[in-house]
Length: 202
Image (cartoon, rainbow, N blue to C red; front, top):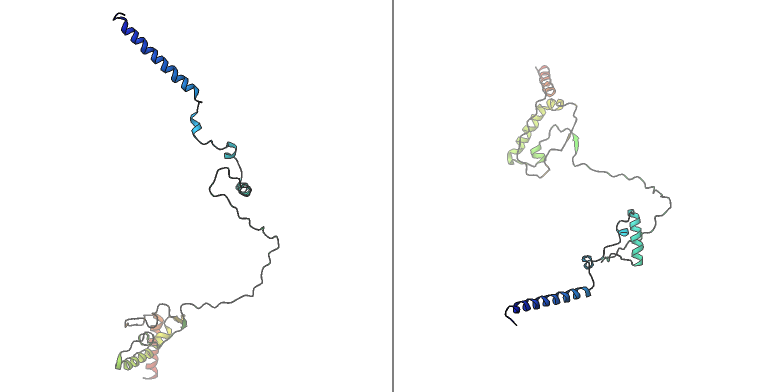
């Protein structure tokens, strides 16, 4: 064997080994069954079942039938259980004849006739000025007597008054003054009363 033929024998040996390994691996691949990429997934549902057209009532009825037979094609964890209600009665509805009832509802306010001699601070809110209170109360009373024509003819068409807007009895209300409002009919009536007094008692 010459030195020139040694590399050629070595290269031929390497080629032979490669061919042998390739043929063995090819034969090994052919022996295993062919698998498609979709075999690794769960098979999909039947298209006829998925794309079924039915109304809601038909769906409920079908689910009732399947729940009674134990059919569970989708493998649901909680099976559908539909309550069976009794059928609606076909008897004619009879209206009960109840006697009419009357309920008295009291309003949160009270309306009364106009008070011409009311002292709001003492009578409604309980103010007491001690020993001088009787003299002050008497003075307010005679002042109201002198202005009685004015109070009577002030807003002559309003003959009532309500406690709406007043404080409740017992509320901590400060001492306030309530001067009479200026009203044209009241002023004319007061002037006429004063003039009549001068005519009667010259």
